Image 1 (cartoon, each protein chain N blue to C red):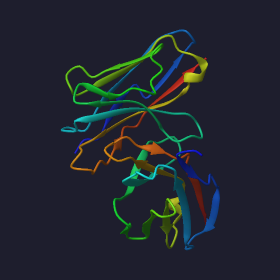
Image 2 (cartoon, rainbow over the protein chains, first blue to last red):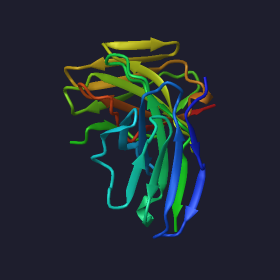
Image 3 (spheres, rainbow over the protein chains, first blue to last red):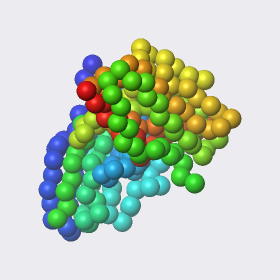
Amino acid sequence: EAGVAQSPRYKIIEKRQSVAFWCNPISGHATLYWYQQILGQGPKLLIQFQNNGVVDDSQLPKDRFSAERLKGVDSTLKIQPAKLEDSAVYLCASSAEQGYVSEQYFGPGTRLTVT
Amino acid sequence: RKEVEQDPGPFNVPEGATVAFNCTYSNSASQSFFWYRQDCRKEPKLLMSVYSSGNEDGRFTAQLNRASQYISLLIRDSKLSDSATYLCANSGAGSYQLTFGKGTKLSVIP
């Protein structure tokens, strides 16, 4: 079974530029998550989708971050304009909830450096 | 109090040793618990899920203590390949969202 796919793997941009990340979840997984992981920290949830609807985006900095999952499969996370503090790894995860069971599987991440 | 707390370590243990990590959580409504392993510059990989009192998989044992609100991970007969950061995560009642700790770094030394 193919895992979660993400691209690009690495991105270097200057502050105030924009950037977009793409994620394709495991086939059949209805729920998709975007996390931000800053060096030395655990992943922090940015947004959760169930199919193509947003379940929770309370921790998404909406003045600069946006995300969509138009057809309920792959998703795009965008940052515009980027700040230095956005330097982090952006991880996408997916899960197939069955009752209360929800095991999330992560993609390889996109390592963003903002200079 | 942070939602999920872990001792960052590092834990430096010799090969063959038994090592245990604890993870405390503040949300008493948490229902599901997970241990993830994260290698340097890699994504977290699911190691174990804990939905009741505990779980065991080979050399790895996870135990949940709801009264004291902590979950532990025990690794027996440590291998060099066990060197990684171990992340604890939980999800609340009716929610599939995970809250992660900062991770505990383990180095297994020859």
